[in-house]
Image (cartoon, rainbow, N blue to C red; front, side, top):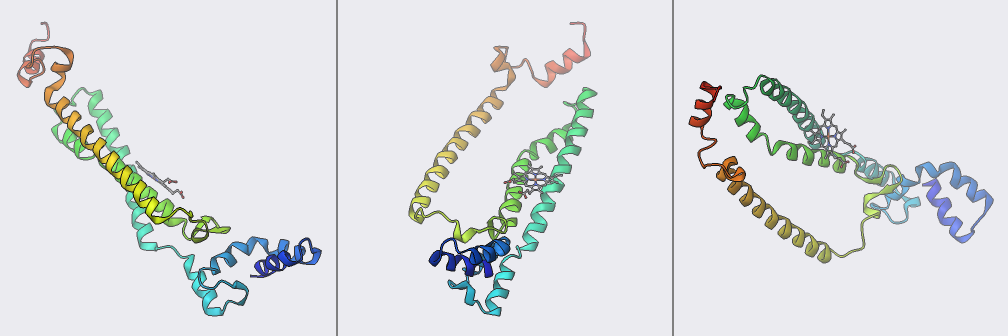
Length: 205
Ligand code: HEM
């Protein structure tokens, strides 16, 4: 508040050495005065209640951050364990027989995306109420672009990327259904379990 008061007076008396000295001595706290603007525009006259409300603004939603962070880290360790087991089984050339591992791997596909979203929540919610920690509050740094423009561009991106996702999943499912034989120009049953089993039991062929 002292730095903010000095800054306001410097507007009237630019370069005043006494005001500059006060400003420089308290400039590290200027961000907190800007944070007060959410509760009062003339921050130098803020009441103790408004100062307390501003102090509480700096406390993040603890439960949300606590769980998002821990689930993200748990998923990180789960991935390390999953890859260690998969590496061990693949090294022993038992991947195709390990149905449980294949199923777990398949159902784990969305988990990195969930971990990334949780990490994003940790980073974005955790930094509130600051855009630059201790310097620039988020509510003072929001864009002047109107909500309508943001809604229009967001709708466009959601529609465009959702369409691409549907096309992508369709192509992937079609390729998986056709199997590796189709891609390699081999007979349709080239990779059937019976053929693979027969090739295993007579390796000389
Ligand atoms: C041992 C495991 C992990 C630890 C200790 C960890 C730690 C962290 C921390 C401390 C942050 C906050 C960074 C900040 O303050 O900006 C963060 C953010 C993030 N994490 Fe994790 N993380 C782990 C696993 C993962 C995994 C497995 C993923 C994704 C597959 C992930 C994706 C992210 C993303 C996308 C962010 C946001 C980055 C940003 O926007 O700046 N994390 N992580």
